[in-house]
Image (cartoon, rainbow, N blue to C red; front, side, top):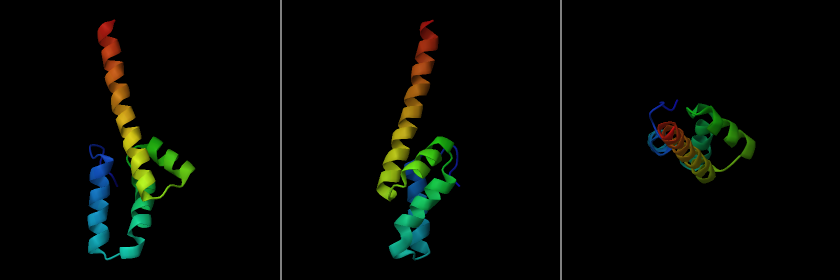
Length: 84
């Protein structure tokens, strides 16, 4: 399970290390993608990935974009509150 403070890049790196140690080889990308879909901390990311059925690279791109969007929205919300 992805930790709340862990970004998707770190989570994927951890999963890749586990896949190597388990010698999954050919299946590693699909297993890592499945793990992201099942265990990503952000529910919205999981929902988006379930709707799209992406490969691993696409799943990581989607998750990164959604993480960055969440950060930008928090920053925008914070700055709009400061302006009031």
